Image (cartoon, rainbow, N blue to C red):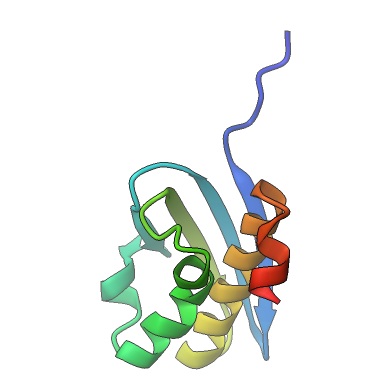
Length: 101
């Protein structure tokens, strides 16, 4: 019997940054390259940009999120994380697509 994978993957790219995002139902834990979200994204603007899909869908504390980001600068990385999260959320719930567009 096959075991269903509890993780949902999303890939985001922005400028030269690339983010592989993995989400699953949880309590809101958010890690980027092994660091807490607030330790990786130091400014309010980059935190807001990276977490925007969670804010507009009102699911900030519903998922645990792990991101691996490479390349680019901090702003590009925040955009890549945002796109990766949005794509993973659309796979999880197709009703989010209209909101996230």
